[in-house]
Length: 189
Image (cartoon, rainbow, N blue to C red):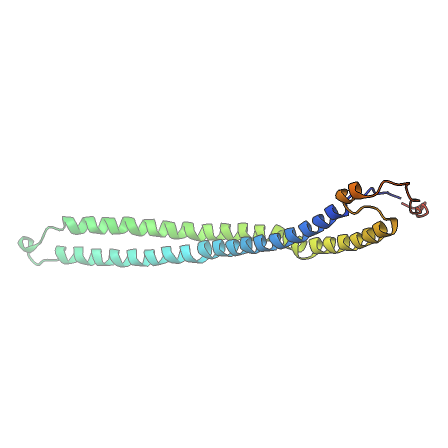
């Protein structure tokens, strides 16, 4: 059987209060982490691909307009009526470059969204374990410690032991009273 040497019940009460405070603090922090994970998943999974899909559509329209403009300039009936199409050709080339870049970014955004979603899912597993601790295990430990503290207070009152070190110095110095009886030792661990 194990023995304990409790010298300050107040410190155990502060430990119990600290455990409850830590559980509450964890719950708030874990909620903030869950919100951040959800925001990251939504941003990279929805908003970024949507943005690049829209940019790709704009680039496709711009390329179509640039090609139409170039075709109009090149389709004059007589060679002398044709306006220089150099500027229109540059516009078509720039529109093609932009469209290629937008398509590439859109593909990258989609693959990044898959990877971010996977990472977010990986974080949610351990986060659930932490939530179990803050919601259930830490409050249960504080409750058990509270019960033990009640027993210690009863024992201290019965034995007239000082509850805190300050009371130990304030206790009268007289002959020691009989110690409380020890419970019988058990053969089982």
